Length: 541
Image 1 (spheres, helix red, strand yellow):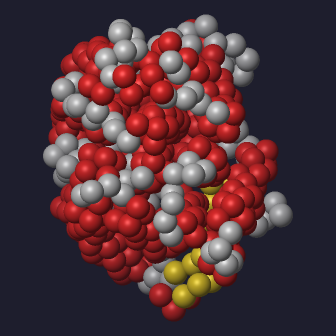
Image 2: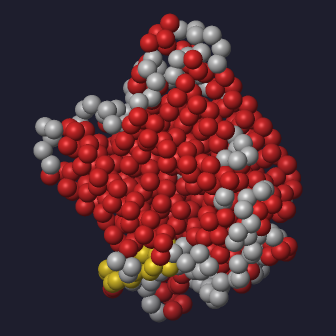
């Protein structure tokens, strides 16, 4: 099992989807229980993967490699490192939570819905585990269609518009990435005489600066759409608003992270000189996204749409940390991907709970819920605090590290982004105050019933992780940091050092976390991984 653990994680959702497809539809409870049990299998396997993962190693681990299309240089290659480890775990955790929390949400074509949710998990896990560029692209495209069906069939009144918009945006970016991917592989083949889609070997592709710039732009646009970054974000509010609760949770929890993950895995190490020169534009768009998402979230009358725009702002922080080009910023960025998936996923679940009771998401329809549904109100308070980065919650650790990294590398960006923290607290706490406190403004709310045991237990794992990461983040940071250092060493070896902080080696994210009051265990900065840097060609002329 140790050798094939990643294949088992990737393919069990696909096999589970096939099992569901063959089951009769007459007993919906059997379908629900079957899907839930099947969704637990990849979660348990991912916990075994975590046990096997060596936190001191920054290179790819648990690798699998088999010939797939040898004449084209395509292999079935899987691996995991600090960038993908926690995203895999979040992906496998969220589906059981989605199924339990929304046990009775879907009342039509249930079997098909469960089938597409398992297929979506299969695509996301495949993309996170793939270490062959062709295999990654295959799973990247496979993620698209299950989500489009989930939005287009089980979504709200404008579901078809939202699904088509999501597909068009994503496919436009994919087309650009495919052209650049083929070009890079052919350039590598011309230099080595061998076709290969192996991502580590592609890091050393000899490209001129102009070639790097063009290819980086193609990859970056595809990933910016998925993040999404302003101005390529307009598909997201519609997709979130129209998607059913389960679709919104997966969209926020994992799909948005694929863009930032793509930057870390491909755009930065494959095209280091171009990535460095794109610094002012990416940083500008990240800061604009932070402020724009926060300001547009303020006046939203729909709770779900407000949370959707908050994702634009939060993902701006992720990109800010990524482009800080230091260990603290990038490590914080990866941790914040996990944090955002947990807190925003929980927000969508809680909004879904109240929507299925009142059939409205309008903030003005609520008020005074604290005395009516106290358990719901208390859970919403905890998740809101996580979203606004209250100390002691997971969001604080991630944003603190991102801002610390940004201040050390680019003080102007860190200073402006701090305004986004204040704005984020403003719109989230305003929404909470209007929905939970004050007088009961609508008599229909008095008939609301509080969360049942199933609904509460569905959120317990997320609440536990919110406080675990917030109070003791070192187990998470220690597994991300070595991979961050490997990436930075690759950039240094490629000569792309103009925006790399010289003092980066002196302060580690685990030491910074210890300074926050977290347990100092394992806070010592790990030794640099021994993996040799794979230099990418094409230094700036």
